[in-house]
Image 1 (tube, rainbow, N blue to C red):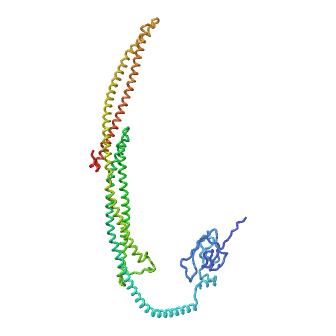
Image 2 (image 1 turned 180 degrees about the vertical axis):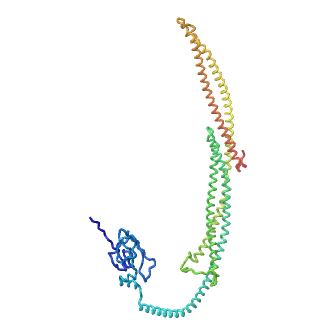
Length: 508
């Protein structure tokens, strides 16, 4: 088949044409050529369109390479042909050349938003009439304004005088209640200080008992470090436990008063805080009302606050305000009465504690008795340990003697063995079992029996020696535990108890 060349003619348009075929009405007709080809890309309008000209813009379009699609047009100028091209380049028209090709389209584009002379005349007449009407209304408005100004000045002056009088009355009321609340605040501060001192004295008493409780607990803790059979639940431990229980019971009684004092201080300080806040608020309100009472039209810092007259920040009325101040004062008086009664009860409770000294004395007596028992047991253990040590020395000497005796029997046994071995070399009939042979054999048997008996005795010595060593070890460990227990009771426990302030009333 022969190659068929398809020629595409370039379509010519006037200079003003739609930049996109999507939703845009054409403003210029197509001059010549085939229908409008499909557009590719986006449409960009001018940022500031003018009313007297159409909307302009640009878009990106696909262009086919020139060698692949030769261009032909009858309007191409022959003198502008480029060298090496199949056809000559295009020449686009402007508005003037477009008028020659399509006069009606160029006329519509040129007279896009023009006005007529009749429109211009009517606009001028409208402006003249509007100026006359506004000038007449302004003259009437100026005449009515003078009367309104006089009435406004009189009304504003009367309002300022009445507001100043009400502010003065309010200042008097605030000053009276401020003084009442301030006086009650001073009395409550004094009472809270006394309650704080009472609570501090109560804490000092508890701390004194806490010292004795700490010493008793330390004694129990130290006695827990005893070892072996000495870790016994003896009379001292029972006395210490009773002492701890007694001190804790006394502390509980005092701690209950501490809690009551803390609650009373909390209530008192809450009432004090309310009084202080109320005094502070009244002083702040008094300062604000004083400034407002002295304020006039020539004061500094005057400003406009739009809509402030519609803002209502009030919380209570005048009667409720006076009742609130009176209730705060009455609450403070009630708290002061409770505080005085509680202080009297605390002083009575502190002076009524007397069981602790008895428990302290009983524990010290039990410790003394236990120390004497430990000293006696220690002396007996030391005596037994000395005797066991002597016996160990004696049996070790016997073991050495027995070992030497067994070693000495080895020579006689060697002689008997050598005799028997030598007699095995006798010739022929001389190798007979005679009385000498029997006696040497009996000698070997006797020596072996003697060595065996001695070895058995030596084993008994060794076993007894080990038993003595174990006994000595047990005595030494028991003695060491007794020494440790004695050190704990005599040095640690009694040393701690002598350092207690209550020791001045206790006889050791």
